[in-house]
Length: 418
Ligand code: F6P
Image (cartoon, rainbow, N blue to C red):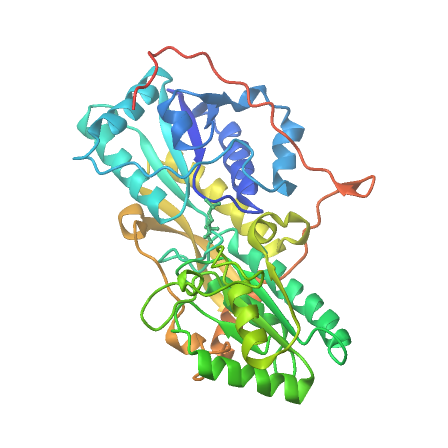
């Protein structure tokens, strides 16, 4: 049997479970005779261009296994979008040159929409340049905005963290509300799509349960209706908990945080719309507030990962290798939902061309008519994704996360000039 090496690359924003996908790729590849060495690109596609290939065979198998419970990107990631073939063919040619030099026959690109596009182009150019490589994309993004797949590995864990944080902080606010804080604003990621914000809605079912308000990027911000709802909530329940997506916009399309408004510190917008919202509440209604921007905490909260998400993250890595060794090219394993309750899913095959550069927004029927909450349909979709706890092992009170050795293979090519 002719053996080839494999190259795995992480791409874009990392997640609490992207390393589980890496683990799925590496362990499965190591069990297949078709694959000799599995390399991981250092800091994503930039490492591939720079010929910085981490030799994963030099890692302790126990450390590879520990990737299952370690957040972040074990081999590093990057935000670097390869230009179009016409604009920068040299980059694609360089990738193929690196593949050739290291006998790479399988390329696994673990990312979102942009990465699907890149993997698709690489799969095309390889053949055009006379060097065939099986390119398989692997889905990942906390934003949950990839088309075709039921969900994106990384999202379920963020969803769980956001819902739990909303529950916990709201118990705090509710306790303090009579004499102190009445409004809590929690900002979550998701620049274009409101999936993460929607997940905050899982914290409660009725108006008297938090969050009383969710602000989605899909719904133009209506300041008057928003303030009326805050007032109503404080008057009825004593407090108001709000989830706001970082991508919320004014009716004219400007981001709320770009509005030139002053934030809670009195500074002109400093990024982050939670302080803008909080200050708006204070100025108009006079309520004392607290706000939080979950930021990287939500993306890295492996201690509160969803078991379902973790299982899916590993499964897509494993399936990617199985596709590649079966000779498939330009495909991506995705998650297909078979049933809502109990949740049943399986891995199915999508074409990379269908995944590239398409953002999946929240469907209209997932948002309540008033624009401030999630519907039953949305809850039915979200609930299975946060099921199960997957706690990491702890030692001395802290999770035992692993750090890879990340030893590079020897370079054989001249340095890459961008
Ligand atoms: O990965 C997607 C995402 O988490 C977005 O929700 C967020 O806006 C962005 O990444 C942040 O990216 P970065 O880590 O590059 O600042």
